[in-house]
Image (cartoon, rainbow, N blue to C red):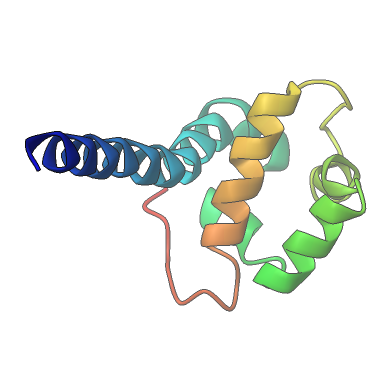
Length: 107
């Protein structure tokens, strides 16, 4: 019984770390936007994210056109400026604060 309780506790503890990491990506994306894209785009992250709905952002990501869309919205952006991990975090940021999400970032 003690062994089962220990395993259950370990599983719950592990799950809490996973869920915390999942929420951190949008925050990282927001920081990346502020540091690297805000000047290039010429507007804040709230305006960037609100350019599309969550479904539209998801479709762009699934089709592999997310970086192309950044370039379209921010003409000074050059492809390859952000690495894949940074792009994934910016996507999470854009998705979380999309026009239909009801959330507004603090940037």
